[in-house]
Amino acid sequence: MKKVIGSLLLLFTASTNAELVIPKKYSDPVSGCTVKQTTQRFSQENPFVVEITCTDKIGKPKENWYTKCRYETNNSTGFEEIICDTKQKNLLILTHGDFKKSLIFMDVSDGVNKFKTKVNIKIDRDNVIRNLQADLLPDNQTDIILRKFKSGKELTYTWKKSNGKFEKVKINLIGLKESLEFVDALKIENKSY
Image 1 (spheres, rainbow, N blue to C red):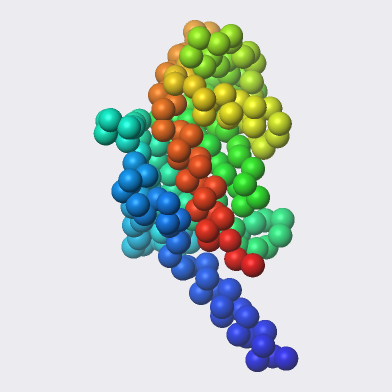
Image 2 (cartoon, helix red, strand yellow):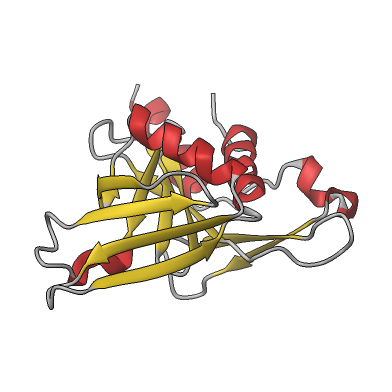
């Protein structure tokens, strides 16, 4: 019995530092996406970073969404999971091990109260969505907003700063859909059974 447990622990430890397998679809230059995996030399916790850059049909680069994927231990289960951050400027989309996504407006922390600051968003020419939490945890509201982001071209968001004035940020949403599809494909490709 002791030998079996020791072998399982060794395999589990080795798998957490394994290089991530890139889905075949993204290895093909015809996909319009370039995927690069690099090793972080001085990071034992997160040894590999995967970055994706996509171009549109006429070869013009889309806005670059930086995607970083890593293994991380889930605090509630104790199992290693692939966690991915998709980021542009100060907008962060965190994909959890169960594929649920959180949305975080990181620059809003300088608001009137950084724990209660609300964000107003506008996608393209749609109506303003008011008073959202600056850090949306995975739920139906977050899923709806992310679907709107993926079909939109530009996001504008505002929040009230501590001086009482509104701050406004614009984010180019082109390329976000492809980045999030890549994250889901990467997680499926590297799922251990």
